[in-house]
Image (cartoon, rainbow, N blue to C red):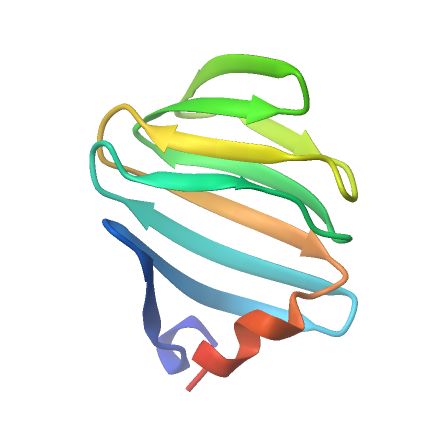
Length: 107
């Protein structure tokens, strides 16, 4: 399915690609240029994010830490979270349920 989906520019230095989804689950690849940010936000979806490449400053709720390849973080529903790429990198995000607003990028 990934070969069938396009990449979408979602911010300065940030691209997103929906790799697969069903109504209650979604996997998304997000690539970041060095210094690019996923701004502080929250949503009703539960999220697990795995660092595939690079190093990121990550905020989840009141906690801030630096994560690198092989690390992951969990953002519960409606908990504010953000990332900043300390170097270029890739994060694999898993959401439940699927983020319907991301599906417009699927081609």
